[in-house]
Amino acid sequence: MKFVDETIIKVQAGKGGDGCLGFRREKYIPFGGPDGGDGGDGGSVYLLADVNLNTLVDFRMRRQFKAANGEQGRGQNCTGAAGDDIEIRVPIGTQVTDEDTDEVIGDMTANGQRLLVAKGGFHGLGNTRFKSSVNRAPRQTTKGTPGDQRTLRLELKLLADIGLLGLPNAGKSTLIRAVSAARPRVADYPFTTLYPNLGVVSVDSYRSFVIADIPGIIEGAADGAGLGIQFLKHVSRTRVLLHLVDIGSVETAEQAVTDIRTIENELVKYNEELGGRERWLVLTKTDLLLDKEVDERREYIKQALDWQGPLYVIAAINKEGTRQLSFDLMAMIEAASDQYDALSQNGIAQPDDEQH
Image (cartoon, rainbow, N blue to C red; front, side, top):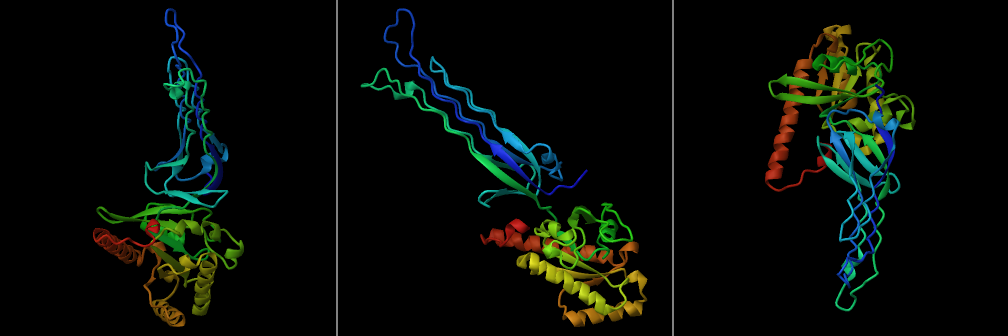
């Protein structure tokens, strides 16, 4: 199935039914009076988050959605039937934006979440509504109002705790295969990953987190080169970015430092907030080096970058170092959750909550 993470759709709510102009006419009942009923409300359009969907590919064939109109009111004070609402199912993680105003209408972050995106028109009033002691035979009615009409931009941003970053062939797909049941393509050529992958990492009973792998980023990505920059939105909600750097295939440690700075520059160009997100450095493919060479390159990289954050060395192909990395990530996530719970109990709002 083709992975689609952005699409444009048009939604139109139903028009409200017009009010009825009617009078009671029955044998032996003169002056029966007005009996025109109200119209029915127009149907509304809702989005519904569905855990069973993981792409927006369904909207490639159908991009216009219209709810039913309300029926017109009838005589004998009969109210017209309301138009049926429609529900449009979208994947969890879909951000909904008004294409014309750039207003973010909502984020679909939980299974079963329902979001009103186009409200149905209000019903018209029948002439019964206008009768009074001085106007016993009103001929006044109102028409139903039109329903909302919108053009929506749907952007799928995968919900994950951890996001993987790196140049092509940095070992991201190999790592996600080593720590989860996900099986992205792995091969000895660039851009084997063409669309994002999610993996669930289980470190113990009832202890797990979600990790997201996106296509590799190359120099000039912020200006449109390569594939990865268009998928950076999928790591925008993550708690921590794992920056994977190949130190086994490169000729020198200096080249690894250059690779790291390339990713850092592209992140800042794309989004300064994302560039400042907490980032862990993971040196990969250490199985291609001697232990002494691994230590020397790690120390050189640490000093050249003045790196103060977490730094790991792994060989994902044989799972060396991946277990400790997984447990440390789990501990960090649990600590962040405990801190959030404590702040919530004290009535303190958590900043950037939508990203967590």
